[in-house]
Amino acid sequence: DAGVTQSPTHLIKTRGQQVTLRCSPKSGHDTVSWYQQALGQGPQFIFQYYEEEERQRGNFPDRFSGHQFPNYSSELNVNALLLGDSALYLCASSSQGAYTDTQYFGPGTRLTVL
Amino acid sequence: KNQVEQSPQSLIILEGKNCTLQCNYTVSPFSNLRWYKQDTGRGPVSLTIMTFSENTKSNGRYTATLDADTKQSSLHITASQLSDSASYICVVSASSNTGKLIFGQGTTLQVKP
Image (cartoon, rainbow over all chains, first blue to last red; front, top):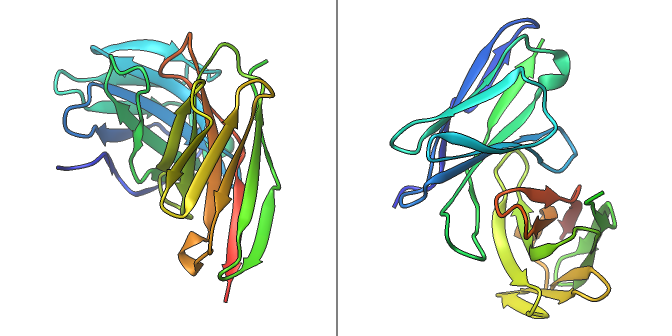
């Protein structure tokens, strides 16, 4: 049973560029959430996707966008990269309907913006 | 404002000793509280999850407590091991947002031989 997978593991970009990060949820999960974790900080919620739609969004600008595919996998896109976007980007999957739903996290993608 | 605060920010203990990490939250309405362990550069791994009706839950050497009245939780680690060195993050889920989790900044624990 595969857990949550993310790709790539590391990425280096320059300011102004665009980046796409990918996530495959744990088998049986239909909901994907994305988080940004700056060094030494707790993760910050970016947004959540369910049934191919964005359900909830945190306090992130429109430069951050996403997509969920019919197979429940998801992409996070960041446009016009800033130095401050350097962080570990975590994807978490869960299953709707469970009251005490547990999110399973992937290993993360380390993004460095130069 | 929904917030989760953890203390201490960092902690160093000797192998074999016990320790307790604290978490205070102001999230309302409250759904559940989780403790995660995060190794450096890795994704968080769930240790425990508790709803408002549960006041203690154990996972091996990890025991979490919850006081929903005072909005406080603690994570007690017994007989620490070198592999316990990690960040421990307290996370609260609000009833109105089953998917949106509010994370604390974490407590960095270092276990020394």
